[in-house]
Image (cartoon, rainbow, N blue to C red):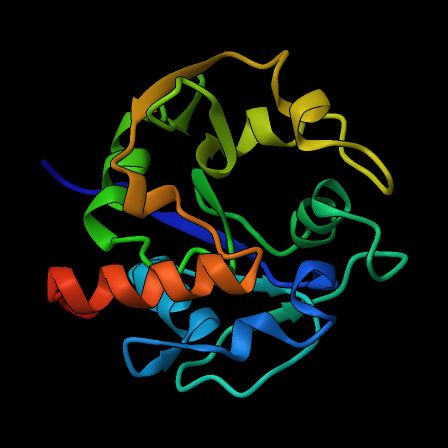
Length: 191
């Protein structure tokens, strides 16, 4: 099967309050910063847009900022929309260091008339691990202060069961410790 063209939006603008305000995306998991790992997982995208403050990365990306800065994930997606043009757009969070390229490929392949949204073991949709047809994504109610749930829940989407690693995000130092442990125990290959 031929893979359709797709773009990626990586959300990287959070304040990391639960980690004391440090730039958590710079923390190392398996020898690389979290943000670098996530960008690697979406590296086969036609265009990778990272929304947040610019940081060093080993590959070229397009940088954007939500307005106002820190106004949330829905505003971050809205800031990236003018840059993406591929038929499918993947949205992921920069703090998902265990996200795998095969799972991203699964999301892209599953996006059809509606979105493809990762769901965790409890059945909860993980809006920040999803793929959407660009036309549908442009109809979402995105903007400052809005929630991803409000923006996407009304759109048609298909749940895609995710193994815990692909949707695991690091919000606390305990989460970071767990990601590092899982990486070491699983002997995970680089994305």
